[in-house]
Structures are given as structure tokens and as C-alpha cells.
Length: 549
Image (cartoon, rainbow, N blue to C red; front, side, top):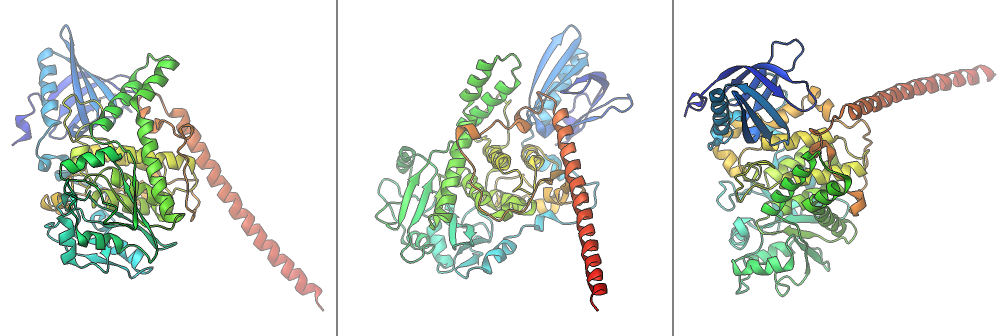
């Protein structure tokens, strides 16, 4: 298919652009295969380049010969185009609709994007499983790398290399895979060096109504326990949902077969419930007619902060089991690709100082989201504005980023990165020039040959000129476990995401710049103090030598 077939009117003059915090601009609108571009001849006017894949929905209005297209973006921005001529307006609207809903992944922009910057490091090879395993292997010999999924034959949503207990061979892993949803047998997610306890994750066991069991699965799960120790299984579904899953062939671990494990059920919502929550929240944030009562009631009705609380509470529970109880844990829900990953990754941010650095956080996203098989292509296909809701869309990753922001806000000096990194990841998960978030798992990315045909997001982010934008000036390395408060009073609406197009951040930006300047000035003064102290010490030494006979 040629993009030209979808572009009925490639260019229109005298189009007026309205967008948040900018004056209206008149210019020429151009449509390309991947971008909507508006350029003006006015001096110092910034061009608009909008990826079609960032467009969530469009509305059309007509007043006489003038047509208006309202574009609602996946990053929650709303822009308006006033287009002279009804035919041109209709043509532009239908072209945008066609270009923003392309079925084929290989027609998306990452396959056509050619970077204008020098690639210093290949992001596709920045976070390999072997490198991550080296961090653990120095502390323990109880785990090994398994290549059992080398051809994605055992589990289509797992990476080719996984970390498993040393005592379990590959043949046993194949048997366990047939007993777990989607073939997702238990694998290592995190090793707590302080006490040797671990977090494992998996899909639900396929016990069914007959109470089916798998001795290899029991052996694998028990291989993570120390002598005389108990473990915890955290099921991210409420008990009644887990029991209902048995009727569909799923289920949960029976106490009789896993006697050393205590099962805890938590309730983390998924799928359409989260999507509806996001839609209600964005609608509330965009409504400028609120009085205080109405705003607070709509915020509460969205349930967004309730979901944040549920996820953070479960992550804190997981971290507590490891660090305070000295117990290993296994986490799963149904598939093990959504709420499971939210909990495992947030528990690591609480427990592991490295996960709070830029490189460590990127490694966490790569390991616990991309390689672990979170279906980004399905979950992020649409955002808060799209009308044609399908079953698979859900802001699971955005909720995770929001939870990270809540912890960052409570511990502003413990993170090497700032909220700009979180916002950037949200934007690129939904629409990007990079191939990192394409596909639903490593198997799909391998078939699409993303490493050969597209650029990694990390190749761009990790350049020094970009890293400076994402670096937290308040950062002071903190090697302790950090325990966030999950009390309702402690959780706030993430204004940097949900209100950034509704109110100007000019004064906040100015305050941030002033803070950076103060910190830099403080460092300069500290350096001068150190020099003066050295000089004083040298003078005192010289005086002492002169006084001695």
C-alpha cells in the first residue's frame, strides 16, 4: 500500500492552528505518510510536527465554508485546525483517520525514521539478560541462565533467556510451562542481596475444577525456599475471581500441594475498568466549568487514585515480605503480563537503589516490561479519547509510571531521574519514532526484525545532551529501602501528565530553573570552601614546621 493513496489532499494553505499556551498561528498544513505538519511564514513561530500514530480521535465541525478539525492526541493534548473549504476539510479529516489507524506495524514511523543524531551506543544491546545475570551471579550460585525458550517454543511471551533455579533442568521447565497460563513458568524477577530472598513471577496455574497438579511446578517453586522458611504467593486477583478462573481452566496454588507457601489475594483491576477510569479522569481534567465540589467528586468517581493505592499497597506488601519477613515470593494474576509486572517492578524500586538510577530504571523497564512480555501494542493502541473501544486497551504502563511518580514525589532526593523521564516514557509507549515499544513481546519483535530495522529509544535517551533533561538535580545516592506512604492523603493527581495541557507550567518551570541555579551555585561555593580548607591546612603545616627548632 502506498501512503499517497490515503492522502486525498496533501496540502492546504491559510489553515489556522489553535493549541494550548500558544497564540493562534496561520500557515500551511501538509500531510505526509507519518506526520501532520503545520508551518508558518511568521518569524519565530514553532512548526507543529504531529505523528499520525499520536492521534487518538478527531471531531469535525462546519460553520459556513469554514471547517474545523479538533484533534485529540494520545498524550491528552487537544489541538484545533480551522481549514477554509468544506471539501479540503473533509479530505484532511478522512486522510488523518486512515493514517492514524494503520493496521500493519511495518508501516509505522519507526520503520521509516532515520536519526539525525550520532548513535553513541546501540540501545538494543544495552540491557542484555546475561549482563543483568552477572549482577546476581557474584552474590549467589543458586540460579542459572536457561535457554529453554531460545526459539520461543516454550513460552511465546517470554524472552529467549530466563533466570531459573539451578536445581531445575530444562526438561522440567517444559513440563511446568504446560501447567502455567500462556506457558509462563515461574522465573526470577529480583534477587535481594541483603538476605538472598527472591521475587519470582509467572502466569496462573492451570489447576481447573479437577484440582490438577504438577510436581515439577511444586519442585520449581520450592527450590527458591531456604530450609525451614515459608514463602508467600501474591495473587493480584481477589479470591472470588481466582476461584471463578478455575471454571475456565485456570486457578491458584492449592495449599495441600504447596504447604510451605501462604497465598495472599489482592485486588488490582485490569483491562476495561482501568481504561474507563482513565477516560473519566481525563474528562474531569479537561472540564473547565467545575466548582470545587464537582471537581473533587469527578476525580473520586474516576477511581484513578484508588487504582494507584491498590497497586502501591501490593508492591509495599511484596517488598515487606522480602525485606522484613525474610521470605521469598511468587507473584501472578491471570496472564502475568499486567498487574504482576506493576507489582514486581515497583517492589524493586522500593527495595533496590539501582532501580532508582537512570540506567537502573531503564534496565527495569527493559527487563520487567519489554522482555517480560507486557503487550504494549495492544494496551497502548488507544488512549483516553478514542470512541471505538476494544477489549485489549488498558493504561497499565501509565499507572505504573504514575506510581513511580508518587514515590519520587515522596522521596525527591532518592531518584537520579526526574518526572521528565516518566513523561517521555509515557509518550513513547503510545507514539514514537523508535521501535522499542512496538510489538507485544520479544517473539513479535524478533519476527519484525526491530533491532535491524528500527532505532532503540535508549540510543537517543542515553546521549549526554538528552540525559541532562532527565537528571534530578536533588539526587543524593540513597542505599536504603524506601517505604512510600499509601495513605489516601499521601497520593496526589499527577499534574505533569493530566493537567499539563490545561494550565501553563511557566511559573513551575521558572521555579525549577531557579532551584537548579541555587544547587549549582551551592556546589561552586562548596568547591571554594574545600580549596580554602586545603590552603588553610597547608599554611598551618608550614607554620608548625617554622616554629619547631
